[in-house]
Amino acid sequence: MTALNRVPSLVARAGTASALTIAAVGGSIVVPGASSEAAAASHATKALRIAASKKGSPYQWGATGPRRFDCSGLTLYSFKKAGKKLPRTAAQQYNKTRHISAKNRKAGDLVFFHSGRSIYHVGIYAGKGKIWHAPKTGDVVRLQKIWTSNVLYGRVK
Image (cartoon, rainbow, N blue to C red):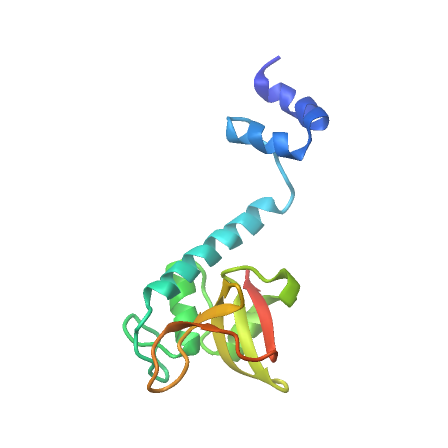
């Protein structure tokens, strides 16, 4: 019996943590949905790094980079460079994401600011209650604490 043939019985006896170790050393374990979630996390992590690399870039309404951005232009640019396509405006981006709760948010998710039913701003969640975003005319791309509870979260599919 080869090592790969023993993986299922080893997994059954050893548990998930050991299964991950087995996978790391050359076995293969199939977990439904894991590859798509991992790919989404990978794109989100890349997009977050790209947005952070634009720190200090000036805000310009309607700009989508690479040197100037508005809020949705920064998210569009960052995810495009990470291999994911988003629509142009914050509201359109909200409609294209998988909506998630604040409790389930992760670094790389989009944070949408709203007033009633109107989405007016978007940034990329950086963790610890902060976002990377292009705030407004006269400002620059920067990391900032989320300043309101009127936010919704979306995960790029």
